[in-house]
Structure formats: structure tokens, C-alpha cells
Image (cartoon, rainbow over all chains, first blue to last red; front, side, top):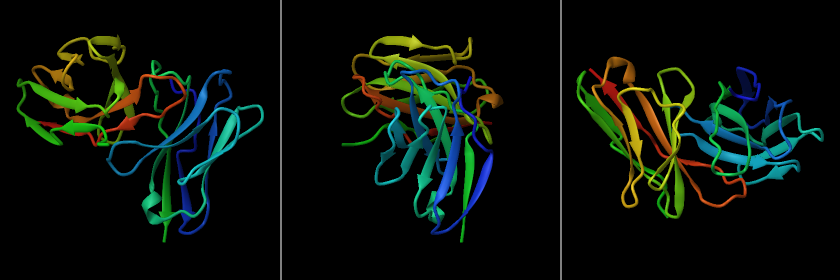
Length: 111
Length: 115
């Protein structure tokens, strides 16, 4: 079972920041928060992950609340190519644990 | 460094035939995962393999489906006696051996159509 809750869909204007929330209230102490996206029917693409500190890379920023029960993925300047389904997943860091994908958030970036 | 390579990209099989899907993980990755995505649905975990071992096959249908990851060569997902309901996109992902919270790298998938 997916351990996260995300809105089904969101719209964002091109050039604006897209803020995608995720609730993971039952997260365990050793579980990381991962974000992936799937553009159309391509293979999922890794975006970012974090444990408790905020993280930033060239694609996005990840803000994790202090109690770790929720997080927000931020795409600072959304483009039309960011239109995709975004998945938030919690999982221990070891490669021995599989990802369980939920239904994700369908983000539509509008021109 | 090539990414995860899956082939074929598209595969058409008649009902009752066998389908063999191949996945070559990224260099240095020893963990392979297979996922299936039915049309308009999310990704469902099928099986997790390491070299020569099946670690978790809790998502595999009990019949007709099998997977292997031999010491040499790609991982193979095999579907025997395919039926129309097997039509889906099958994605393979790989990850490194070590800990550290690495993300998976997914391949572009194989789209299986059963006619």
C-alpha cells in the first residue's frame, strides 16, 4: 500500500512555481521521501529525495516539515515540459526495498 | 554511461504466444525491478531481482509470468501464453548495490500488445 496522499490533479501557469504537496503522516524514522515523475507514457524519472533536511537540485526543491509528516515538491519555474504525473514515495534508503507508487498528482502546466 | 536499456520497445504477440522482455541495468547496478503499467493506471511492482536471485516476487502473477537476472546478460521477464489482459507497458529499473538513498533509474519501457 502506498503510504502517501497526494492531490489527484493540479494546474500551474507557465513560468510560475508549481508546489506539489504530499502527506506521509505514518513515515518511519529511517524512511526517505522520494519524488518521481512520469511524462506521458515514458519511464518514470527520478527528481529528488530527502530525509529531513530541505534539498535542492537542478530540477526542483524538496521541503520537508519538521515533523516529517508532509513535504512539498517545488518546481520553481514550471514549463510546458513539466506537465506530468508526479509521485511522492516513502521508503527506506536501502535498495532492497521496492518503491510502491500511488496514483500521484497529475500536474498540467498551462501556457 | 548508458542508462537502463529495455528491448524491444514495442512487442506484438498473438494470444497464446510467449513474450520475452529484456532489461540491461546501468553499469554497476546489481538491483533490478520490474513494474507493469496497464493503460490509464499507475505503476505496479512485479518483481525485484539481484544477480541470480529473486528477492521479492510478491507482485508477480502466480501463473505464466517468470523473471530472471543471470550472472551474465540482461534480466528477462517472460510471459507465457499471453492473453489480452497482459497488454501493458512494462518498465524495468535498476539501482546500485550500496545504501545511501539512491533513486532508481528507469528504462523507457516495453509496450506489449496482445492481439
